[in-house]
Each structure stands twice: as C-alpha cells, then as structure tokens.
Image (cartoon, rainbow, N blue to C red; front, top):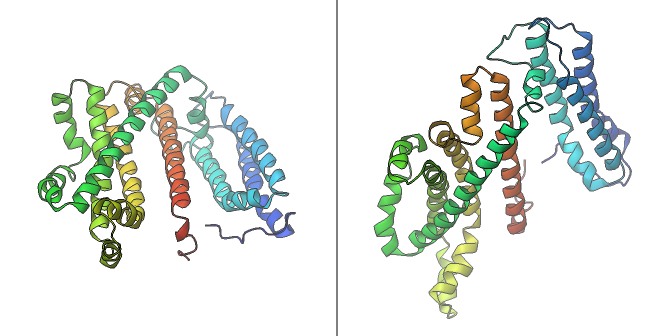
Length: 328
C-alpha cells in the first residue's frame, strides 16, 4: 500500500514529480559522496563497480520515471517505491563511508559495496551454476511439499478417520527443525539431493497442512448444512464450499512454508548438498571471500522477494473479493 494517493491525472502533478525525483537525488548524493571522498581502506584499492552500478541504476530509474509521468498505473507503482529507493541508496553510501572511505568497518568480515558488487563480474560461471542448482532443488521441493500439504490438509480437515491416523504424525514430525532432520535424512535417503528435497518439502508440507486442515474444520457449519439440504454431495461440499472458504488459510500456509523452505534449502546446501548457493556461501567463507558471501545472500533475498511477490499476485487474483477489506 502506498502512502501517496493513486494518481488520477494522466500527466504527473508537481507534487508527484517531487516524489519521483527522490531516488534520483539519493543516487546523486551517493555517487557524489563516493567520488568526492578519498579511499582509505584497504590501501591501493581502486573501486569501479559501485559507481558504475549507481550510474546504471540512475539510467534505469530515469527511464521508468519518465514513462510514469504519462501512465498513471505505472506512476502509482513507481511512487510507491520512491521512499524505499531513496533510503536504500543512502544506506549503501553509508556502508561505503564506513568501509572504503573510513575503515571503521574492516575487512574481511564487512566488505564495501564496491567489493561486494564486484563479485558479480568475477567467477560468474560458479555463481550461475550454483543459482541453477539451488532453483532446481528449491522449486522441486516446493512443488512436492505444496502438493502433499494440500492433499493431507484436505483429508485431515474433512475426514475424521484421516485426522485420527495422521494428525499425531503431523504434530510429531512437523515442528522438528530442518537442521535436526538433516542427519537422519542424509542417512536414510539415497543421495544428498534427495535429502535436501525431503527437508524442503517437509518445511512446506507442515505449515500448509496445519493451516489448511484447521481452516477446513472451521468452515461455517451453516454453509455446509445449507448445501446438504439442497442435495449437494460430500465431495461437492468439500471442493465447492469448504475449499473456497479455506483459501486465506491456504495462502497463509504457503507463505509460511516458503519461508521455512528457504531456511531448509540453506541448511541442506550448507551441510549436506554439495552444490547450490548455500554451498557457495560456505566455500566463499572458507576462503575469506566475504564479499561473495554478502553478494550470495543478496541473491537469496532477490529470489525470495520475487517468489513471495508472485505468490501475493496469485493470492490477489484468486481472492479478488477481499480487496478493500483491509485498511490502515
């Protein structure tokens, strides 16, 4: 939700133009301080990537800002991000000052923004290979966990027999952290990749099953009884009454499960699977390459942000009836 009103005029107003200029001001302040302040730590270090990155960000933002002046929908999205982008560039420059410009935060544990960004221009093949391996493992585990969680949640929530037999299993297995399951998974699974898939799927399965089954049981009894009086079968009621009423809980379980799955992915790759971004972090840390550690964490943040954003978009599309119910 934006703190600014949704643009209604086709051409940007002077007030909107001021807000559109905020990220440009943030980039220029960061770039000016970076170029005007002498480098102190480490000695003989010549930064190039940070300033070039700021210039690329400036060019990209100017293009979006220029187009947004004439397209209200695009302008609404850009205006929503202006404050965050302004703060982001100032925070990056603050880190630049504390590291490269003053040496208050020292290597190897706290690299400068330039040193972190420069890791994307070297050893890109290893990083790309690790990214692909992590995505294959993560997405496969998410699909398996979501499918099994949907089925088990529906059965446990609707059937008393399934709830009797499977609820104790869910309550015993589900709350155990992924790190505790790793030694067992590695021992019983045929490969480290299979163990990683098990951990990721389990991390998605438990919250989705818990939230979905609870929502099924909490379905308004008046809706169920009305459907039965009208002659609806139990299968019809399950899929056309209980399931739609449980959609908010399903998406809540998916959000929680996706967050847990990221933790399981990192644990699996750091301690078991010999590939992926988690493994890359351990490898870089072993060589004291903390710039690569920070950049890889940044990649994780971007991946998680994209997946969560897509899930929010799907939720907003499926649950259009909720639009306008939440206010601040």
